[in-house]
Length: 619
Image 1 (tube, rainbow, N blue to C red):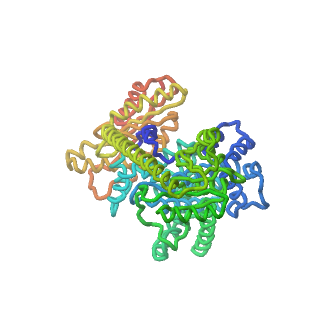
Image 2 (cartoon, rainbow, N blue to C red):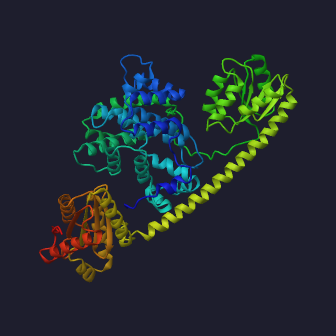
Image 3 (cartoon, rainbow, N blue to C red):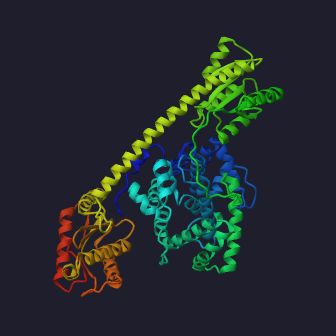
């Protein structure tokens, strides 16, 4: 269905997978036409973690650098700004969505398969050029992002949906529950993030395995299909791989790969997959099962997950043993630099840090943690040898929550930890309440969306109905007028349809209508809006399309319906369609006049021999 999904409605849940921080800034910068490599490089340098991964990527075998690259600007120049943008986007999404709360959605398996698809697609586009491999990598990685979005935005409802999908088509269940499926949501998200049109069109085509054309978009769609099959093969166990191989061999033959060449290609791809997994920290170890249900990640507060930071090895050893004996899970670091890295990777609930350390002291560590949205809520306890008023004020201003004086009394420290634990417990309860509110809000939004979809959908064909068609035509007409662009309308009427109902009954008539609607939708282009007005009448809105181009579309639809008769139905007349076409540019004619002109042209076709097309005369 071509109704527009309300992305802003979904964004209000604040649980949509989305880029953040430096990645978001790079996305926005690269979208500007006058952006330079130097500007992007400066932005990358702001994020040490991203800088390191960019250099690792630029020097990896996956990128194929001929000489070592140690300069960020050179790495950005070699990769290209679009590839850097896509790489940063991917890292941000993986880092923020490596785990979640949706039961039945395996986050590890999702990213592992997505990485396998992306590595496969990059390798395929290198062998069979359609787009730049560095950019196709990100398309492969995010080609199924809609699944993650549903699991993130509606974890409980989507978990139920996954559970109910045993033996049932998942896409149909998703449309029933959310009024959209993960394929369409993937397209919407990638469009919102500024992915090029060829990526979106190819991804949409790839959802249908029967892609036959020779255009660059259709070639990329077939490459996506093959990459997904290889992705499934990568994460499968040996027994399942044997089942997948025949389908893989058939698909690979369309790309000039016979069985020996395919197996060599897969082996090389799996090797790259493992290398990439290490590079961006995605699990690719298939010796351990990847496809297992994900448990809900509720915090456990019987013992805290805490980090102890102290440059005194004796103090670290003594305190870590005492805290572990008290039931806490304790990690240790010797300075602020190593602590920052640990916190980013493991996200402890509480940090105990000494003040005086080198090279980064505890005060600097506190300031760094409070400056980051990722770690600003971590509870911080400072170990200090002073109780001077000015020093303590400075420490609290830097962001500590509490302090313990040296020499450290274990009894006092444990009491302070219990106080911190109460605060952490309250934080988690508030977060849970917030999640519940978001979930209720999201469920209400889904219900509203479903009601709106039902009100605008023809139940028999699944197409938008007359109400939606007229509103959408008015909107598209206004948009065409503002942009001074062309807009065309096709009015369609199935020939001899009344005799089908009269002689064979409405059940057969319904089958004919559904069959014809499916052919119309398949023959239409990505941006065309196919609607059923009622009875045997249909309307197609073709934005940014002049009359001559609309006539080509009309002929494609007419020919498709004529050549593809419904199976198993004995009809007095073959199913054919008459089509009237009208086009406008800018303000004239208005949408009502445009629709009337198309209807008049349709009438002339019906008065002639039917099964034809006609373009209305310009007013």
